[in-house]
Image 1 (cartoon, rainbow, N blue to C red):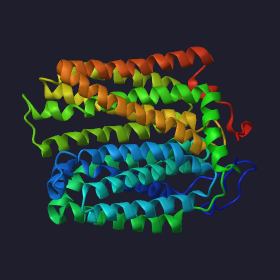
Image 2: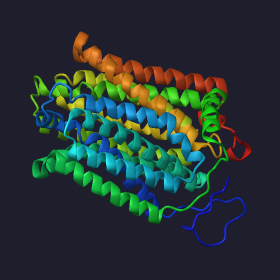
Image 3: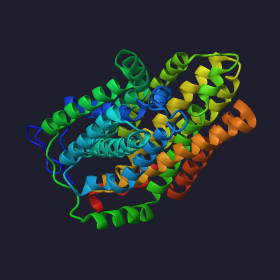
Image 4: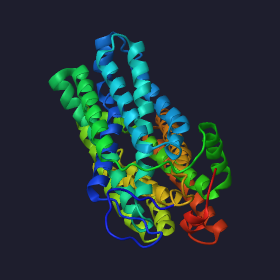
Length: 419
């Protein structure tokens, strides 16, 4: 299906899809980063928030309820992206998120704080997981990889910088002031997107219940989506294994890093943003299959260097850089494959793929924590390598069963209709 927007001008060939303007894609990337950052501001401030509310022991639940809200949005909110107009959907979600952030800023009790955190997680997930398929819909096939990579890079920047921004802002205006600022920024963002986003019709004329059924049917009918979702879950699990336990390693001998030192170390994840942009170029050239295999091999090997990082910082840095490149690059390639599977169903695809991806990260964090407790850093490294190796096996099976590169197994989008 061709999408025509007011952002384009000039004659188009029949069936051709115009390129979105660069400023619009950058706006979507910025919106992704600012929105996802709202989920992470609380993490470095949990001790401060808990002390303020006299609930030091239970404040960690704020992260958990945010994750629950995120998963709920993937299941019940994101599928709306195919059946309603995306611009009002995104703006309504942002307004809800701004309200939840304001409620966080004034929360008198842990109960109010946790309820606001759940709504923030739900609204944030709804926005970012509608924006990415929205960007994919606006882009022509030969530019989709680059466009999606640019938007994802904005999200990665938001995640990476959120902890640093949270620490600096909380020192200046307190944690409540930080959330007031976040609420205002989110409100302004809603206004900017309301003015800038093209008005596009829904991709499918379905009711909500039919859309949910269609999402389940899509997963059942599309083996490529299932396998790419499993690969994504595996690489994000390896990411979770490492980052759930890295602070324990860095805080102990031989490093003895402070909280600030650990925060600066986390900025190594910026390599992932570069990887996503590079992977987008491979996707636009039709090389997703081979590139995915190379990245999964790199991810598996990276944990050898990470294992040596229990004593040598240089090896730890090398391993983290390689792992982040593998994880983020594979994620980008997965999206470039699955978004080309079925025309008019990208929100359903996002719901299915991102649910698996997120559950993989949750499982990886749990496995990593358990592995560290039982076997120390080498057990963590082995668990991370095992997850990426499993992803490599799934990729190899995908190649064998299709008899060609994974991205080619997807039938042309124009030939497919669902719902």
